[in-house]
Image (cartoon, rainbow, N blue to C red; front, side, top):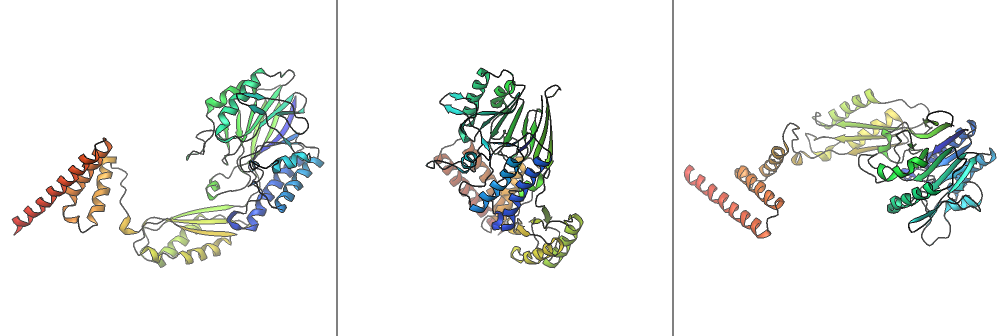
Amino acid sequence: MRATFLHMADCHLGYRQYNSRDRQQDFTRAFLNILDTAISQNVDFVLLAGDLFEKRAIDPLTLVHAITGLERLREAAIPCLAVEGNHELAYYRDNMGWMEFLAERDLLTLLNPKIDGERATLSPYANRRGAYVEPLPGLRVYGMRYHGSATAHAMCSVADALAASDRQGVEYTIFMAHTGVESVVAEGAGGLSRRELAPLRPHVDYLALGHLHKPYEIDSWIYNPGSTETNSIDEAAWPERGYYLVEVDTETVPKHRPVLHANLRRPFERLFFRVDGCKTPVELVDQCRSHVERQRHLFKDREPVVELRLSGVPPFDRTALPLEPLRQMIEELYRPLICFVRNDTRAAEFAVGDDQQLSRPALERQIIASLLERDSRFRARSEEWTELALAIKQMAVSGASAEAVLEEFTGGEERIRKSGQRIRREKS
């Protein structure tokens, strides 16, 4: 059995990013571009793994854009198989969400099992309801909507149902869900562990995911194409994302060959500049300009979104940072759609040296001493105050009572006071 399908997710139609109408149009343009690719490649079906829309309450224009793209697929006789994501789930009291609205008009096939307690029912799609569909003989596609914190429980129930299901004549199985995999992104956006997904492995050839906007592939089995447009500046670090084109041939090993493609999208340029070496605001603008000119990319076709992020400690008053001249410089060099200058610098009076060669205890001591030396009340006895602060910190970490900590502080303060008096007497 042979087949070709396109896997996409996280289109977020209707997102007016930065309150920009142009950016809202970009999300539509990316969506339509991918669907046009599906048509030109004559795929057998399209997988839409959640978050077609940015939010549950959409404006009429966003709905028109969604219908326009899905009608193109229908006219080309290409079914769109979809699941609901977290952004588009109907409100609790609503009878119907917008994904269900599109399914009622036969613009997409909305898949979801019935889960009752510990039991999942995997019924074939009929009357616009069901857990699976067979777009081609021998190929079955299951789907499950976003379940949030209950996803692990729902997935366990589905795995049990898959193990017990009759799949006679099924040569290739796809399972589609709107959920992530743990530890794919460094800051941890949640998701299922590989252990929680493992029960699906004997019954599923291709696990099609959405939800996390970073593209990833795990064990030649789990696939997430990433977002179709750049939903935040952090996503600019993942240029290769958009959609998978997958060729299936059950006579080969492995049975599929997925290829990740980057679709057309608005370019983003993220620039970083440390201000430490600039003695004056004028010098800062000049050095930053040279830095940007060396690193910038030229975008001939589309105006980029550009962010310049400043860091470090300026050797002059932080309020004198030339933010507007820097913004004008970016405007001149890039002609951007949108430009941001982010000020992440620190004022000199609050900057603490961060010698990476120091151990944690030594660095901790250095920071406390440095802070105490800036206060005239403690400067003369800063070493003794540092020792007292570290002693109190250790007592707190060890679980000492509040009374014991207060006693140590009072006694330490008295010792430091008497030590200062003794030194002054000796000097006199």
